[in-house]
Length: 567
Image 1 (spheres, rainbow, N blue to C red):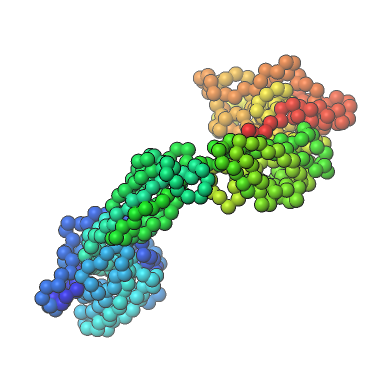
Image 2: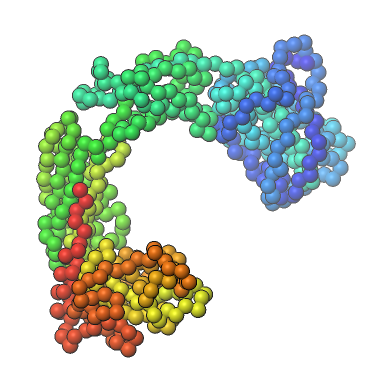
C-alpha cells in the first residue's frame, strides 16, 4: 500500500427508492466545518493510514451501516440500466496520515466503473458523528457519468470538529434510481490539549479592571467548542475566582452561571502552549441595583390631552449608574400605550440619565395621546430601564394606566356545550371590574344557544365570568377571562362548558358585591342602551336618562380599580 492511502470498501446492496436518490443529491451541499453529534470511536473501525510499505490500492473493509435516505423526487437523468453503484470501486488518499481537530483535511477520491456499461450516479457525503465535514459547501460529486472501465478523481477538503475522537471518517455514498452503495475512509486524529487558567471577577469598585479581592467564588464555567455544535461542554468551577483545566486545542465560547450575576461571555482559542491569566467578568443584573416606577400624574385624561408620566429611578448600588434610558416602551403596535420616544422623554429617550450611588432621581415625561387610547378607554405606559450600550441581563420594568373615558362598546359572549345536552340558558355572563373585584358592572342570561351581548359598557378592561347555577359544571379552558371592551371592534369571547355529575371546586366565581351579583339587580347601568336584553334575561337595565350619567359612572368604576404602578 502506498503511504497515506486508504482503500475502498465493498458494502452489501441496499435498494433505495427513486425519491431517495434526489435527496441524496440535495444533501451534497450541506457541508460545514462543524460536526453535530457526539460519538466515541467505533472499535470495529479500520485502523488509520500508516506509513508502511507502498502497495496498490485494494478494497477497504465493510463500512458501518447508515440510515436509508428519506424519499425525495426522481432525478432528471436516469442511469444506464447495465451498471449500478455496486460496480463502483472507490478509493481515498489523504494528504497526511494524521490530523488534529480543526485542521484542514485534504483527500483525493477516485471512482472507477468496473462494469461493462456506462453508469450515471450521484455522490453524497453522509451524516455521522465522527465524520469529516466538507469545506466549502460545494460537493465535487454531483451527478456524473462514467464509461465502462473509466475513472474520475476529485479533491475534497474538510475538517473535524469533535474534540474527543481519535479516528475520523470520510463517509461517501453513490446512488442511482434503484440502488446505492456507501463507503467509509478512516484517518487518524491526533489529540492535542492545552492548559487554561484564569480568574472570574466582579468589578466592585467600577474602575474597569480586575483588582485584588474581586475574585468571585462558585461560578460554573462552560467551554463550548466552536468547531463542534452539539453544545458539548468542559466545565470548571471557580474557587475564590481562580479556575484551571485542560482542554483539547481549538476555539471555544466560554459562558458561566452564578445566581445573582450575569456572565460576560467570551471567545477563547486554546493552543498547546496554553492560555493562562484569562480574565472573565461577571456583573450584577441591573434590576439588583436599580429600581423604577412610573405613574401618570392624573387618573383621567381627555382624548386629546397629552398624558404626563412621573418616572422614579433609585440606585441602590455602591457605584454610580450612568446612561440610564427607557427602552421597549410601546412594544405592542396598534395599542393605547406610550412609545417612550420623542423630545418629551428628555434624556430617557436620548443619551440617558446619570444616577449617583444611593440616590433617587425623579423625572416627568410626556408625549401625545396614542390614537387608540380613546377607543380602549385607557392610556398605558410600560417601559424597561436599561444602561445604554451595556447588557446587564435583567432590567427593571415599570407600568401604569390612566382612564380615557367617553366611549362605549359591547361584549359578545358565546358558550358551546361541547356536544353535550347541557342547558346553556341557565348560565349567566357576569362582568366585574378588572381582577374580579367589585362592582358587578353588568350581567345577562345566556339564550338557548349559549349567546349573550352585554351592551353599552364603558370602554376599558373587565373580568368576565360565565356563572352556572351550581358547581356541577366544567369548562374546557376555565369559566373566566380578562375582557376588553374596545370601541369599533368586535369584542367576542368564547367558552366551552357542560354539566357534570360531580362538584367542581375549580370554578371561578365573581365577587359577592353588596346589592349586586348573579341573579340580582346590579348597580345603576354604565353604558348605552340595551335593547332586547330584558326579554332574554339580561339585568343590565338602562334608565330613561341619556347615556351621560352611565358614562360618568363607568369611568368612576374604572378609576377606582385601575392598576397602580409596578414597583
